[in-house]
Amino acid sequence: MLTAWSRREFVACAAGAVTGAALDPQDSGAGRHGAPPFKISLAQWSLHRAIVAKELDHLEFARVARKDFGIEAIEYVNVFFKDKAKDPAYLAEMNRRAADQGVYQHLIMCDGEGKLGDPDEKARMQAVENHRKWLEAAKALGCITIRVNAASAGSFEEQQKLAADGLRRLTELGAALELNVIVENHGELSSNGKWLAGVMKLVNHPRCGTLPDFGNFYDYDRYQGVAEMMPFAKAVSAKSHDFDARGEETTKDYHRLMKIVVDAGYHSWVGIEYEGDRLSEHEGIAATLRLLCRVSGVGCWV
Image (cartoon, rainbow, N blue to C red; front, side, top):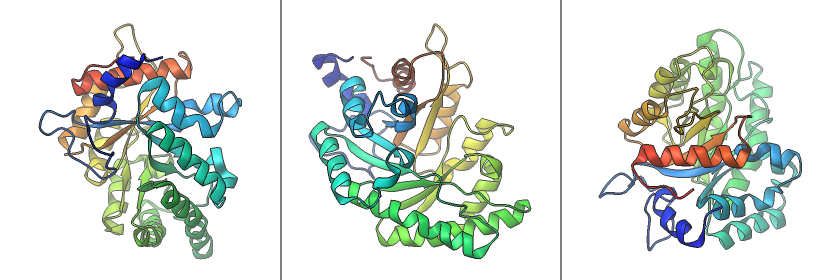
């Protein structure tokens, strides 16, 4: 746990050194005028074991992010409030809890709503429609973005065209609400950086982008993949699994990855997503936070 004093000191790192003003979800000014080169948010999946085990309620996520780690921006996972997307009272309570902690609700990661690149046009259009409620929920929560998947079937080129079609349609719905629709490398061809960059070029919409995840490239070179996705990035997932005695991530070179991120001109939210099993979820989040702060060149108080 952070002490009251150390939490105040830490805010400059976690919130991108924004002081004396409300957090701006579209601000990209970190890294200028002495501010840290990026801002740090917390992905809810980092606490999925505690939530599934009912040791932590979804509504307590904002409090944990703020009180336990000093983090002021959060990224939701839709499966943890799957039946509440159209519940105004529940969304209002989420807003109240976040506001009480001074936490910005950044995005919703959306899974289980169908294939946006389904070869069957009717199924593809249904997948687009299934995501509409999450756009509306994101708008109600003050989020700027929803993260979706680009699953499809067929050849490399066929899947690009199909995924681009579904994404373009969904992005147009999002744009009407001033929301972004972004795609994570999340298995199958979406974990191929070249393929996903090609999809973005086909969609060709300023509200459609990527969420490079450091850990989901599988048989694809992660450094190449992040570099290919960064020109379209509107969020970044700093996936972590394990750490050595020096606090370095043992499965990937965080310094190299974050250099790719910052060199691409990205200075916005980088979401901690701890997915390891040796450290506890709290320990893993804290270790990832310390490493990101060290990479950013700003002191950390956890």
